[in-house]
Amino acid sequence: DGGITQSPKYLFRKEGQNVTLSCEQNLNHDAMYWYRQDPGQGLRLIYYSQIVNDFQKGDIAEGYSVSREKKESFPLTVTSAQKNPTAFYLCASQENTEAFFGQGTRLTVV
Amino acid sequence: GENVEQHPSTLSVQEGDSAVIKCTYSDSASNYFPWYKQELGKRPQLIIDIRSNVGEKKDQRIAVTLNKTAKHFSLHITETQPEDSAVYFCAASIGRDNYGQNFVFGPGTRLSVLP
Image (cartoon, rainbow over all chains, first blue to last red):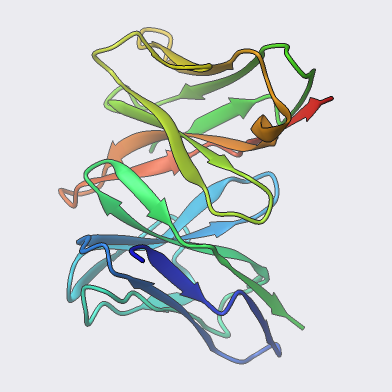
């Protein structure tokens, strides 16, 4: 079954801890993206990667880090420097102009 | 940079009526405008798109119009059905430092189709 998979669906962490969200795709897409979705604010771009071993900051990269060691994988780490990490995180891969989204991970920091 | 506004934020219509969602963008270099539908608890999915060289595009009950001069584009849903209830996001493409095209998304419109 081809697609893009995020795990876990729900994640709870204590304040001050780093946490890594997984994103895997078997669509053979070069481009991958991480978005944050907050109520009333749409999708905001955190980081993106157009090719393996290369990634760029999006509009709200502060407090986040990523890696792209494999074409299939683009994990996002939410660090303790992110002041308001509780949110819904969406990963996407892109072919030409169409973005394919994962199911999302809802991160709650307590 | 690009800024995309979307109105209304919520919209309720009776089943069978039409729904219209409007978006404006700021960057005249944007040339591709997709619309995504996100049903409750599900991932956003592309439902229709339009390029800047086209003024209107239709796909069954869904249509999108683009006014490049005014920098706005709209989603039109006719004969609405309960399964049309979802959050709809518009987006505008932007180029980022020669790294290909990305999107700036609008804040979303929650459409409720009442039976």
